[in-house]
Image (cartoon, rainbow, N blue to C red):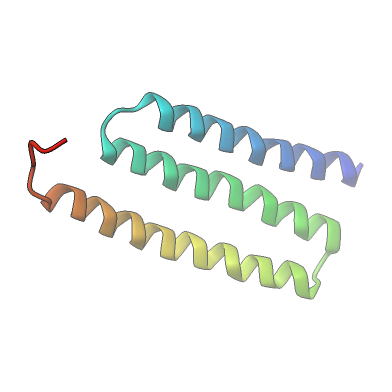
Length: 96
């Protein structure tokens, strides 16, 4: 039963990555694309971390992955914010 739940969680992570990729390809505005990148970071991190906890229990690997996931969520949000601000503040150029 546990392996089925783990497989479902990993499939959800892969589907989330594909949805984010399709959204990234479909959207034209850089700010909208930035939302897709943040979406993929969140949607893939949470199920993979949960699957690791189910597979290993409270192991060193699960704890490390949890710390990496929390760091990614925090740093990813700050990076997305900084990149979005840079996109908004950059001057428009007519150069190709």
